[in-house]
Amino acid sequence: MGKQGRTFGLGKKGKIGISLEKPSYIAGEVVRGTIYAEIYEPIQCDALVLKATGKEKVEWRESHTTTDSDGNTITKYDDHDEEKEFFKEKIVISAISQTYAPGRYQYPFQYQLPVKLPGVFRINSYASGSVDKLEAKIKYKFKATLDVGGYYASDLKADCSLVVHERNLEAIRPSEDSTTQSVDFLCCFNKGTCQLAVAMDKNVYLPSETAQIQCQINNNSSVAIAGMNCHLYQDIRLWLKHGEFLDFTREMATRSFPGVAPHASLSQPQPLALVSDHGEFLNPSTTGTLIQCSYRIVIECDIPWCPDVELHMPVTLIAPEIPNVSWVPFVTSVTLSYLASVCERRWPQSPCHT
Image (cartoon, rainbow, N blue to C red; front, side, top):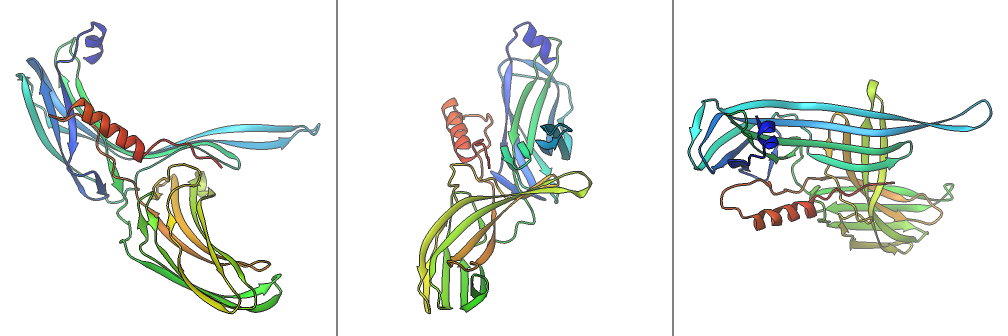
């Protein structure tokens, strides 16, 4: 129906849009929203349908280097493409053939999200080791279609992305840990012990927030701690066939703080802004079936000529709540442009390389 209308240059006789009740949802929640329609002139419509989809898609190129009988190095490339569909459902909002008079209409709807869903995720042009051009996304979307009757008519369509957080997202709470380790010069000669205790304000953050970290260091050794360091690491696991997987780790942010003299103690804050030092977007944590992404903050006592004393503190980054950019009544084009710019700033498609 729509193709013939476009072929003959017939303009649309209206427009539709989707509005959601909330900017984000947790897996297992009921999504409530409204489909809006604005009709410019009388049209015959056969049905109003809403499609709900959720899927995960991963693409990458893997290189293999071999040597032929003449000693020449040969590099071969294998392209991989995997996809998993979490759900794909068609919801018939109205199946009654009717004539719409010019005016505005609205149709509320609701959709029950499955309980076991990974959080939204997107990564572009990631490269590490033998893996190159890694593209991965976990995306959820609604698409509304007002089926316009007539051979030359164009259907009215609108879609809306949905931000979903995993249901197993642990409760936001403070976290703490401690360790006591031997200070062994050149890994052989014991110089005493070092005790490190860390307390963090919480364990779940939005990208660009600052993790408030309080450290207590008791250096019961004869060796000075040259400095204290905080690192944010991103760990990505790419699942292959037959249960095999590839792991990638990148340091995303780091900050240094004063050290501790021999036989001295120090209590100091060591805040770490969760912003990439490379100017890249920090993807949210997720546990998809094809790709997983997690984060940890490592607090490190840098002790020259000795194994460093470290604590690894797992943290979860959740997706920013992106405005649902779709037409709704009384929203001007200026407002939509603003929402689109906000969306781009809060979730840009930045490349990620190693």
